[in-house]
Figure 1 (cartoon, rainbow, N blue to C red):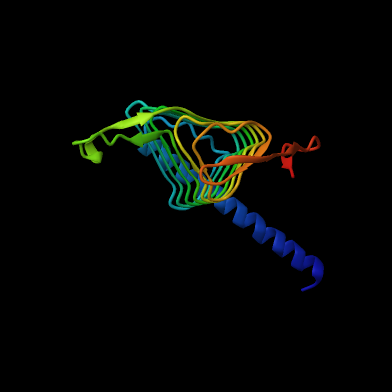
Figure 2: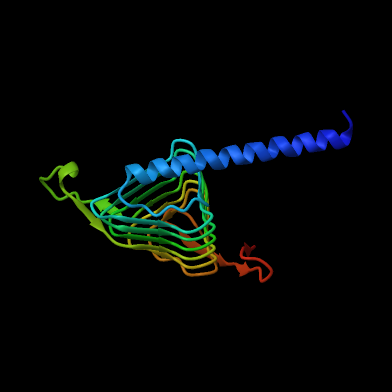
Amino acid sequence: MNRSNNLSLHRAISLIRKMSFRLISAWRIILIRASSQSPYIPFSTSIGKDVGINVTDGGVLVFGENVSVGANTRKTVRGGSCSIGRNVELGPGCIIACQERISIGDDVLIAEYVTIRDQDHKFDDGVGKSGSGFTTAPILIGANVWLGAKVTVTKGVSIGENSVIGANSVVTRDIPANVLAVGVPARVIRSIERDSSSSHTSF
């Protein structure tokens, strides 16, 4: 088999793999739509293996176009409103838990094992945590934000557009736009510039 035939075979195999993944992803979307309470998930969404999406108690979940959801990601919307913008990438093992409001802008990159929760358990004296209820506050994540691996975003914070949160950081207060923030709790260490030729930030 000559080189030209080898290239043609390689391209055909690659195309078949892509088509198979799209079909599997579309089937996963159909199953999620059937099992959850009215999530809006377009067929341009890529859904990885063992993704769990649960929308209950009048909650609303809306995906933009071309969202990619990594394997073993969990999303729970219980009575709240969660919106995920266009061209967002969610790495494997992420957890998003919404009881009030979570808004994620366009072109956001969320690395593996990131946790985003707009709620905390109450822990009043004399009441067990499992029955004490929750306190909630909205989370707003601007366009073109990058959350590094194992970042945690807590309730009531906003992250400005184009900002980067370093791996393993815990965001407990607002982060402005166009900055790099790291640490526990996350703090701004310097400004970053937006590359005018693309939608991404540069260091």
